[in-house]
Length: 118
View (cartoon, rainbow, N blue to C red):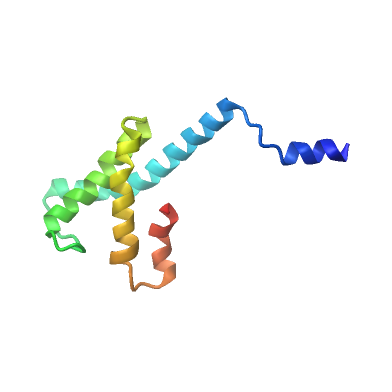
């Protein structure tokens, strides 16, 4: 009896359907979290307010466009499962810039949000 319980708890045999459902859940949740950051940036870009940080020295407008594209457009692609492998590259770069450049000297309580993605 105990052997069966232990083997059930520590099994590595999972159904393919369960794995696909967990991947779907993970993809939808992460892209939804990214959309909460991207949609305000996209609306800011559409309204003509180009005031944004320039951490890489490429210009405020270019930084805003790239961050909006990464956090809004690529997150929508990831949400629907279109071009997922390619669409994950810009959000990874954006979160790396946020974590290691923009919030470099912030306390960890503020810095932990971009680290959550990694």
